Image 1: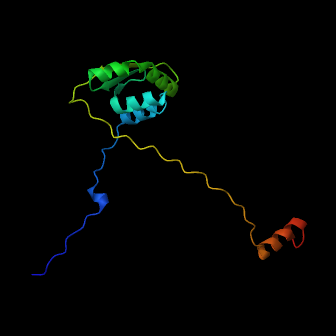
Image 2: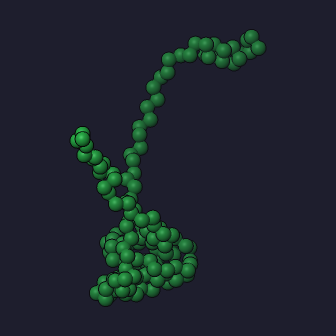
Length: 143
């Protein structure tokens, strides 16, 4: 019986695939990009989650009472971000959720902007056939 070679798995196969983001999770990430100051944005991103949104009221969950107290002082920043996104006032209500309800969202990594590539306009060699036919039509010769 011949020996079998071990099958090597690529790193790509070994990495877990994050679950697809829900509409609420995407909305939450969009709102968080507008929250100022940045420290508040990061705290909310790490410690809070959008539970429900009806267009006028957002229910936000946090996993503990100490985090509730910290996040509650920053709800006005969050309401401003919602208002900026929706162009009308949105009320944010914070609540402590149980561990069963708390499923942190895997954030989408921000896209790294690519620097603009310099445009270099190099002179092109003449296209003799094209330039001749173009010049003839420009001057009305051989119409």
